[in-house]
Image: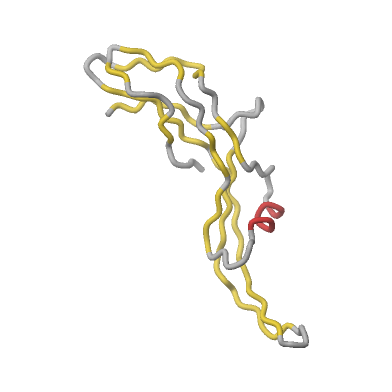
Length: 129
């Protein structure tokens, strides 16, 4: 799955070539009804190595040519691992005996993928304004 695109270079008016920019830092995230701290359960139940954060390269492996008369920049769209599960709320009486369990809905966790070199994995693309 892909995350939200981040702008990693300044604008360039063509004809120009963009070959480096800023590094983007991608962090993990969680969504759903997180009434309690389910993050540790989501992380421990993931079928992949959980990455809290990952940074992209600032020097691109390819150059991006901006066409004459156009304004463009390089965007980085990170790749994310996704996992999910149901969250539950247990209710206990004063004697600490479980009296009910209710489904609190789905919770999702997203972790940035990394390349074998340890950088954020994703797609660099020229974006024309």
